[in-house]
Image 1 (cartoon, rainbow, N blue to C red):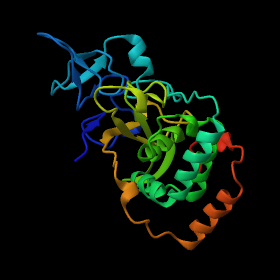
Image 2: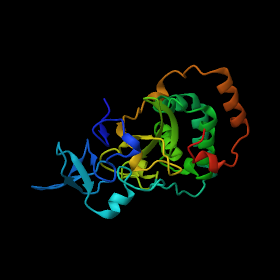
Image 3: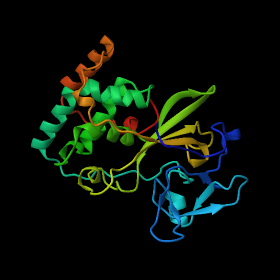
Image 4: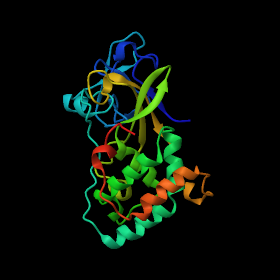
Amino acid sequence: MPVTGISSDTARLPDDVNAGGYGFHVVGARYGIGVGASPQCPVCFGELLPIADDAGRLFRHLVAQDEARCPLSTPSYQPDAPSVARKRDAVLEREQRGAFIENWQRHFQVMRRAVPSLTVRRFTYLIGYADVMNLWSYPALEQHDLPYVLLTLAQFMRAGAMGGRPVWVRFCFDATVRDIGDLWTQRGSRARLFKMMYNAPRETPFPTSRQLIHYETVRRDPSFLETPPPWMKRADVKEFQRFAAAGRPPADAGRADTGTS
């Protein structure tokens, strides 16, 4: 089962105000070394400070900079995201992008399981964005990580409704991943991926921590490429084939990085 955390005592938030700016619940916190060591945020690894509440389970970040940048507490609707900083390598790109395209149905299925509202069209926008960012040029790239990387590149996405109210979703890796390439070069424990659900924003283009409903860790499947390709709708297959036949088009970055579908 995934490890989950919630931003209030329930997943239903009155008036879009939760504990984000006033404290948040933490599940899966890391702990420092030594007696009396403070807990660390599972997402940004910043030191946490317990605050008074009825159940004694609320925390805030000790350092204001952590409070401002962590997805669990940031007031910004444009939180930090890992960079994709590679110089284009045409040979690597052709090989690694080609392997992805060959297995696109499997990658899409993994992403669709995480976000049932994901469409093939949005999927192709994300591939186009990865093209522009030279994602395929990382020498140590692991194909089984790519659906999860694309989910993080998508940033905020509309994700249907929960309890009759529209919700949004965003994925992010923990603080060990500053650049996407860190996934494949870091040593030690494997980076954790978080799925965060939000109520729809009312006053900002995208959600902030004030709309955070809950978060959970995502268990990444390293063996899905070994499974049979899933059944796909004929219309979806044709749409993707048209995209693939166009080669490496420039990404429509404006739509690929927004909450539109």
